[in-house]
Image 1: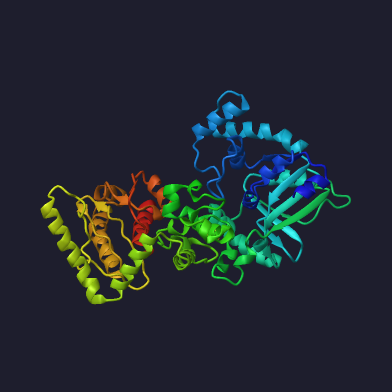
Image 2 (image 1 turned 120 degrees about the vertical axis):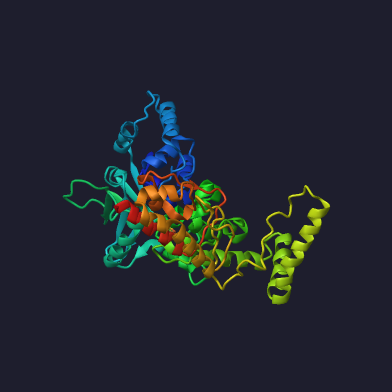
Length: 467
Ligand code: SF4
């Protein structure tokens, strides 16, 4: 990139959003060369004028900021009266950016896909700034990862059915450009020079290995939208370019497992990411593999390794496994008798009575799911029979009343303080909002991979919405 800029005497670069250029720290590199680099995606622009803050989401980079914060920032940086109307704020940003488009020497865009058959780059955006970046400057550089090369236009058609739907819920993005080379003789617009920069950056190291599946990632962001951990901690906590479950696998794969020890642990392994991934990447399996590799290489703290070894020893011996919680409870009772005011051992699970782990299914039911007449389910469960019993309980608790007394009103009456877990996702939130229902999202709720209960609730809500 530096050579291209030097070759063409570039002084000013305009950029559209590209996560690969975040990987390359392109803005910093260009800045060190004395080349001004200006982000033109609105979200990226907001971050850049806020002291080059990193994005927190791969599709919505500034999702962590609210309108008021951005209004303050614009007033401070643009030296204009503070606006709070979103359309006016957007217009102000466009007015600031327009002269930059007209005076830039080079435009840098990402490339959602490269098509080998035609030598084209496909660029998917919703803002239209990409069109200005590719048409106005005399040089256009499309930067993308090597895994984004598709054989044919037919393959592009297939992935384009997946990307906008999974990224933003659109059938097609507002803008979709297929660019094949610089301006030809007789054409009125387009750059004089066009370059493709294909970035490896650790990608080829994944080929043939345990994490090869990640090369199918089309960067839609669906996994992070549905991840209960991402929803709680936001994108910056992941420490590098890619947040969410895909980032928790990609970052250790690119920068080294030893350099990203916490990321594979930042997962409930609930499996929501697997379910929503349009590329069917088994993210939770890959996260588990990373944990295994950390353990094999002795990268976890000794206390954790020792604890797991002890647990493994006990879990392989059913007699000991059954005895352990009973003895722990006896100890806890003895402890509490001795120290009546000590709460340390409260809530010790009744492992002898509660369901045992069942196969590979890993299910947690939120402990706070409650209805009018008290908790519907107050235990943490881990198998299908428990889920079935929860479904039956919900059926009895809500279904009868819904049928008897009109849908929406009865829903509110039946479950005024219903606490819903976050994995119900944006569609559910929207539906609840439309029904003017108050959904309290539990601070401490866990997620579960089974969709049985979720589906049941969705059916009820769908029914209520159309009633
Ligand atoms: S891992 Fe799957 S869901 Fe996540 S960004 Fe990649 S393609 Fe989308």
